[in-house]
Image (cartoon, rainbow, N blue to C red; front, side, top):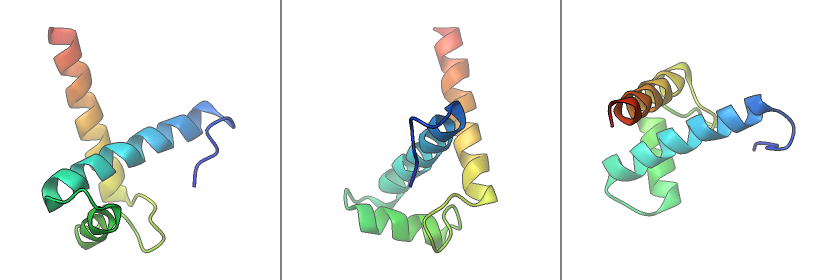
Length: 74
């Protein structure tokens, strides 16, 4: 899916995907990858090929910005 050695952009895409996938695991209440992906598709965070949608990217940005604010406040 991602070639992490290719560029910082690939790392960023991977981080965003993992952030959304983590949210999907939590919200689905399952530790099963397929169930988390199914939830992500249902909520339109992931498209049919498993890539982030615009909504998924926005969710990732929200979570990552929130984590940065929390880190700065600590």
